[in-house]
Length: 198
Image (cartoon, rainbow, N blue to C red; front, side):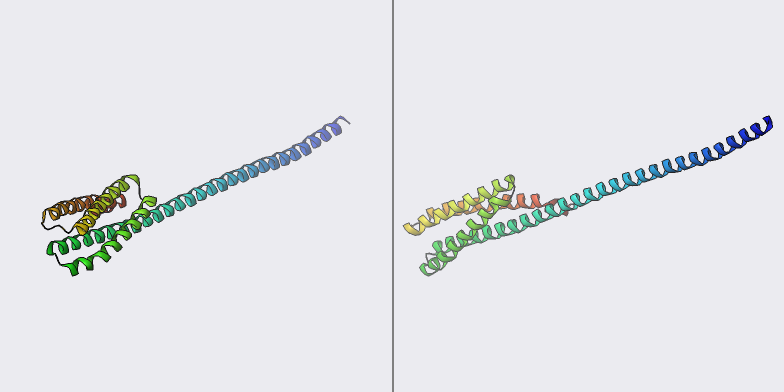
């Protein structure tokens, strides 16, 4: 009977060992599977976070491109209208110097149109351009308007000598300098000058 119990004990231990090994194997497999699932979940979270970051970066880059395009369009308009306004002033200066009443009258309408276009373009710039460029735009606009005021006074007074016309030429030269500063500021803001050096 002792041998039977011994054999039975060996059989029970063998069965328990076999079952224990199977349970341990299953437990390890389950633990390994959990680790794999957790690693996959972390990887998916990392991929989602990376994809979201890429999406935000692309949206930010698109917004910057849109702002740059908006500034470029505003700068083109501001530069064009300022130059046309100044050209209209110079045309009036030449007409006044020639004392040709028909030319003077022909210049009045375009001068006023260019002044209004410049006002509108400057108003748009006030909403779009950065402060450093707006300072240049403000100085150029003020100078052009000062020149316009001098032209209007000359038109009203009809001076007999060329003295006031000399003052008008000085004002025009000051406008050229301020418009050059404005153009340089706009080009710098757009990175045009830096690109040409690459």
